[in-house]
Structures are given as C-alpha cells and as structure tokens.
Image (cartoon, rainbow, N blue to C red; front, side, top):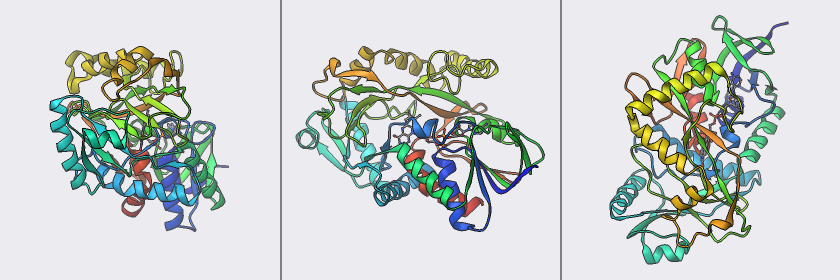
Length: 397
Ligand SMILES: Cc1cc2nc3c(=O)[nH]c(=O)nc-3n(C[C@H](O)[C@H](O)[C@H](O)COP(=O)(O)OP(=O)(O)OC[C@H]3O[C@@H](n4cnc5c(N)ncnc54)[C@H](O)[C@@H]3O)c2cc1C
C-alpha cells in the first residue's frame, strides 16, 4: 500500500526538525512525515558543526542571515535552557592581526550594532581582562551573547518532542525522484503527499533541480576539520575569532570552548571530492565526484571568489602543525603539544551561481509545485533554525 501524508519533509537535520515543529504548532490535525536517507537524525552538518551560537555580528544588515541569526540565537538559547540542554554562555572576541584588520574590526562593529547585536569595541588592555589568552592589534570586538550549544542533544530533544506529538519518522529512506508533483519515489517505495519540504542540506540543490527549479546553482562541498586541546579544563574561556575574509566569505579558523568546556581549533574549509567525503575513501560516488571535480577544476582555473587561493591556503591547515601555525595570529602562547586529537569532520555546502559565477551567501528558499525547497541552509543556519523555520511555515506553508 502506498504511504500518504499531508506534509513530507525530506531531511532530518536541524532545518527539517524545526520546520516539522512549526508545522505541528500551526496544523496540529495534519499528518507530517520526516524521511532521511541515514539511520538517524543529524548525521550530517547538524551533527558535525562548531556548535557556536552566533550573535549575528557578521551578516549584511538586510540579509535573511542577519535577521534570523539574531532572532534565532535567542530562541535556541531559550530552547536549550528550557529543556536543560547544556549551553556554555562563554562569549566571544574577534581579534585583528594587523592594522588593516583593525579598520575591518571597526567596520564589523558598526555592522553588528546595525544588526542589533549586543557587543562592544575593546582595546588591547580590556581584551586581556576579558580573554587573557587572546591577542589583537589595536582593537577587538567583545560579544557576550555568543555561546556554545549541544547540537546533537538539541536535535534529539526535537525528535523526541515531535514523535510524541505524532510526527512520523522513516530512516534509511532516501528520496530518489519526483514522480508527478504529488508523489515521490524513495528507497522504501512511493510516498504521496500534499506538500513536500526539501530540507536535504548538501543535496537540496539536486532535489530542487528534480522539481524543475534552480538550474543555475550547484552546491560545492568544503570540509572542515577540528583539532582538540588535551587540556580538559582549558585556558581558553571564550571563542576567539579572526576578522573574516570578505573575499571567500568564511569566518575562518577559531578557538572554541564547546558546551562542556572542551577546547577545539578549526574548522578548516578545504574543497572536497564528493558531497559526503569526510575521509579519504568515504562516500565516493563516481558520477557525483566527476561533477564536483568538474566545477572545482573550473574554479581552480578561473580563481573566481579566490577559490584557488582558498584551496591552497586551506590545504596547508590540514596538518596539526599547519593549523596551529595559522592560529598563532589569534592567541599569545599556543603550545602545539596541547592540541593532539582530530575531531569529527563536517562538510559545509556553499551555493555557487554558475551564471553569475559567484557564491550565494544568504539563505535561499524556492517554491515549486506542491513543494518548498530550502536550498542554501548555509552557516549559521543551526543558530538561525528556530526563527528561520517560523518564517518558512508562516510565509510558504
Ligand atoms: C564544519 C561546520 C561548522 C559549522 N559551524 C556552525 C556553527 O558554529 N553555528 C551554526 O549556527 N552553524 C554552523 N554550521 C552550519 C550548520 O551546521 C548547518 O547550516 C545546518 O546544520 C544545516 O542544517 P540542515 O538541516 O539544512 O542540513 P543537514 O544537517 O545536512 O541535514 C540534511 C539532511 O538531509 C538528509 N538527506 C540528504 N539527501 C537526502 C535524500 N536524497 N533523501 C533523504 N534524506 C536526505 C541528510 O541525510 C541529512 O540528515 C556549521 C557547519 C559545518 C559543516
């Protein structure tokens, strides 16, 4: 017998789960089914990220990222506290490595204020009182509201809450193809739906394309690795971030205390060979690799959005020595021997517009036939998720 549901959500990451939660609130009598190709929730970006509850300093003031990061960080904080999920309210500093970065720090501060973020501009002396291990050139930004969340515990609590409210989950169920706009083929058979919501993260572009949308876009995978400090108490009390590189639109390698105080440095952002290629031979799919490599070779050649420079710079950070060397710009006395263990890698998709030849650095939502597609759940989508899901359900469903 064919399965039928009112809402069919593809992807059990933080975006799929928070959208399911909002749908449950808005339409308590309608049926909701969440499918995922993996054996459980949050097996990809939602379970493999830095865990930083961003305050919303960086993003262009009129962007969806700024809007939902600021609102979402408060909602995620409240959700963690209400459900007694560990949250390390440690704060963060953004530091400058040289005079030109000092100018950027001041610009970043103005942007943060325009975004409504609670933060202050501090000098070197004030910085040494706030975070004695950090160093800066002239000025730094202090953001007391940046924190560290427990990514897996939040997703688990959401899943528990949703199952209790009657939402159905099917794991090891991969979306395969769109049959007719009201029915899809999955690895477990056909599923009929009223509305499909594509929250497939790294594969969201593929599913949207199958619905006849976004022909000009492709998601490119960048792998991030973390190196852990073996000092469990940790000298580093707050997040220490560099000034982000405006050309490549990444926040850069940073020091982060996790929700339990463990310290890590990372993530890197090295272009990878396949969309879920976490380690050398993992998840190599020939056609996918061919496609990813074709896009990456073109970018290496053209150096659009500084792709070639980024790739070579990031490759140097793949060794412990390289990563620590890079991090000396952020802190006073880093001892390489304190950072010994690699953590679980994560892969960030970046949405590339093939026509305009540029990286699209804001969330992208597209409406299709009986379907809504979350195509670019770019960082800080975890922080933004609760507010973003509310927006999607209020305006698209
Ligand atoms: C290294 C790294 C560091 C990050 N740091 C932060 C941070 O500090 N703070 C922050 O806010 N954000 C951070 N992010 C970003 C954040 O983690 C992601 O933006 C967010 O988790 C995206 O959630 P998602 O649900 O869209 O995607 P995902 O978590 O990837 O979920 C998508 C789901 O869809 C499923 N799926 C895919 N294809 C199919 C298919 N064909 N059929 C069925 N299911 C399918 C997958 O199995 C997966 O479970 C980071 C990301 C990475 C990788």
